[in-house]
Image 1: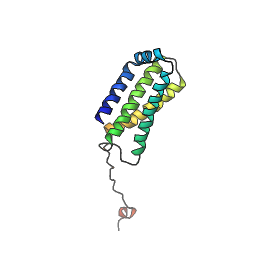
Image 2: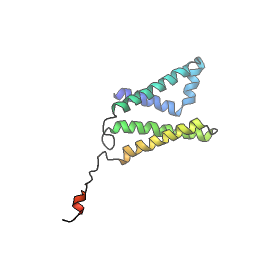
Image 3: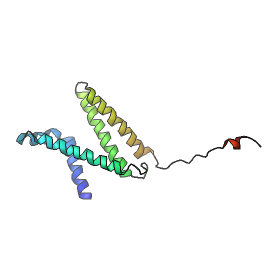
Image 4: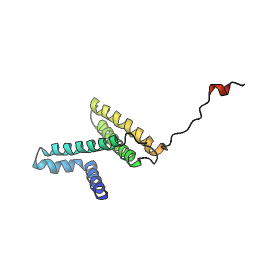
Length: 135
């Protein structure tokens, strides 16, 4: 698990910070290599969807399933930053703005789960209407 995490982290950092150089080296040989990158990206989305699906019935927030919520936060936060940078540098594209909105929403939601939520359900005392009436 540690070695696969390290390999994915290194690949993710390279893809984040030097995408033009990576695409330049890859597409210089073959034009269809970009399709392979898109397929690998799709497999990452699919894998993250599986992780989220398996955690659907579990309590998330605070210390509970923190790695799942932290991984989702990192994905959506970095995705929102990348989409925001693209939207500022290029013409206003409705598709990019819509994707940015979705990513920003999920980034905020997972930020709240990771950093603000305790994961504990607060117990509220219910007041019975009979208790309010003096006998």
